[in-house]
Length: 225
Length: 370
Image (cartoon, rainbow over all chains, first blue to last red; front, side, top):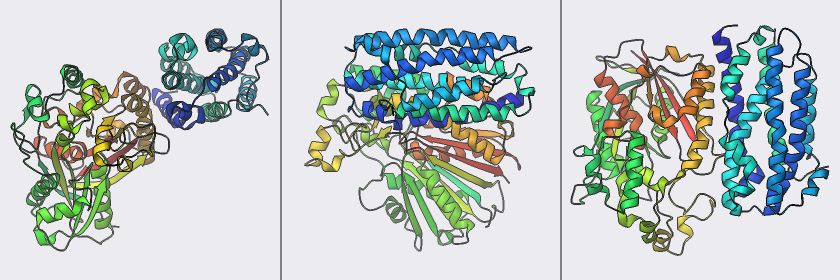
């Protein structure tokens, strides 16, 4: 697999990423924050929905890790490293929820919104396939999106609700701590996984579906079916 | 469809070049903090000199229409085109001299050329490529035999201290000062015809691609409202222009945070254009971007490298440092300088890139030297 193949796949993934990243500003909760229509209750609802979602986040990555077989064990470790970082997220979300006058016991019953249900089901389905390297692209999208969303949203919500840093630790953390996802993805794509026939197309497809569902869970904040 | 060639280019930059140290003589003084923001902007944009349609004692030297007409004259002279051969004039500018009527009418009046079809394009930096695309189609379809497109800006009128609300002296804004210390005046024009010039180099227009992302981004560079959160509160809805002025609704503004959020779609669109036309960065002999490499930021540069889409920097040509950022004029002023200062060879390809932060659009033009 040549460097050019990796670059061309990166182009396709970057287009997926920029298309969906730029749609963030059209998501109602972000538009409301920008246009000063947001209430603290809306922000708490988002924190609660994200709490329910990230609980699943570390689980599907762990599932993906367990689906990796020889000779790709190095990539298994990479999935596991991601699971660890996801794991820490819900503690920060609980902290912010409490700092915004939320009752922490609400979080015990937090449900995934209908967008999160779809996103989570999709991720578990992909993660259960043998050697689910198509998820590398999805992780790039989620983390790239996650980071840009975090920055956009942290600024908008802080301005709109005059919040203190203590109330926005989760989004601030993700906005400020920017591990080099690009290096990691390039290394993974260059490691031979693209030798599997059809893998490049599968990576792009999984990334595209994941990006759409990621936006869906933001559009569906507070909707539980 | 006929092929289309740029057979003449013209640039007009009014007066003498103004150095960074002399700028405030022309744009006026607002305060120490404004100046500090201005100095920081100059360090980032790398501009060393620019031109203004003003003298040191505040006299206006040219209207926007006069700037455009001068550049068109230059393009006609260079392209050896008689006035009565010209049949189409398309203008691009951020803001004409008058609110009504359209800008192309004023430019035609300045030129004094009869029997023209005209079209006025008002946007920001990419308005000149909108005008050129109209001219291109007009010649391609056989409706026009000789068309000219202009881009021109008289930016410094926005920057005079009394143009701002009184409260602005106490509330300097980084986005406002960014524009005040970046934009300047000038005009550029290109003449296009269905055949290359009999002598000298012409540029075949292979394609012009443009896309707007206003469906998802709020206004980023704007004038006519006090802020970009509420599109409906526009200057003409105040009780009087005076009230709009004091509310800051007549100030030219830039939302710098939003600008940063727009960068990725420009990169994504660029990758799409490469794909669509099957070109690789190595195929481009000269890249003429309206912005300097440094303003792109390390993150986007890294993305371009990872996607193998970075055009080698030695092929970049940019004259913002000496000509200033002349908005819609810039792409034609660059092209004019590139043709004069390099030795273009037949077969060489040129890619022009004009990102417009106004409400997030980007335009590309691909040319081949003949």
